[in-house]
Amino acid sequence: MSDDRVAIAYINKAWGVKGEVIAEPLTEFPQRFKQLKNVTVSTARLDLELKVEWTKKHSGKIVFKFEEINDRDEAQRLRNSYIEVEKSEVFKLPEGNYYQFELIGLEVEDSVQGYLGRIDDVWEYPTNDILVIRSDRGRLLIPAIKEIVRKVDLKNNKLEVTLLPGMEFEAE
Image 1 (cartoon, rainbow, N blue to C red):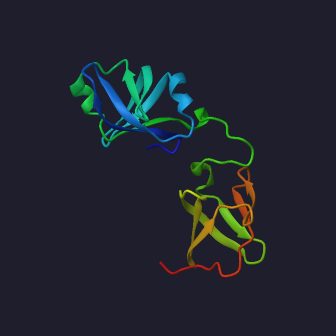
Image 2: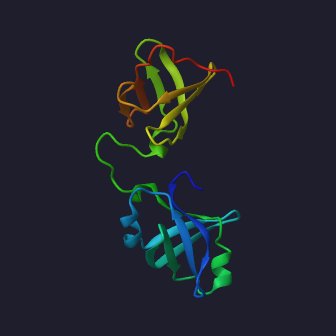
Image 3: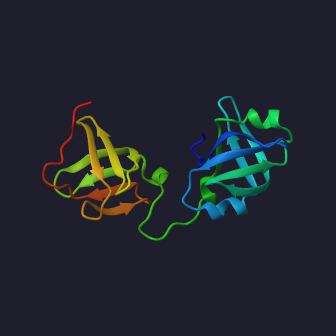
C-alpha cells in the first residue's frame, strides 16, 4: 500500500464468472462505492490501476466489476488484495472527526508531562478508539475520548492531551 492511498475494501474472492470480485468494505461510507471510477488494487506483487465498471451491495459486502477483468480466473488473482483510492479522494468527515491515517505519526504532548511520543497505531474498539503512543519510554495507550484528547492539529502534526491519573508508559 502506498502512503498516498487508503484502503476502502478488501477483496475476499472472485464472484460469478464474468470477472467480478466480492469485497469487504473498510469504510463507514458505503455510498462511496457507487461513485468510484478509478481505483488501485494492491496485490502482494504489484499495484493495478483499474476502472470500476459497476458496483453493487450483496449481503453486507460489495461486488465490484472492473473493466479490465473479464473472467473468473483473472478475478481470482485479485483475491486477498486491497482496493485503494488516493487520500485526496476520501470523504470529508464532520469537524472533530479524523481518519486513522491522519492521526498516525502525530506528535503527542501532555499538558503536564510535555512531549510523550508519536502515534504509532490506532486500535478500533466498539466504545472508542485507542491511540498507541510510542517513544523511548515505551508504549502508552490513550483512549481517544474528549476528556483526554484536547486538540488535534493536523497542520502542525500535533495532538494535545491531558492524561488521567494512572496513565503510564509500559515497557515493550
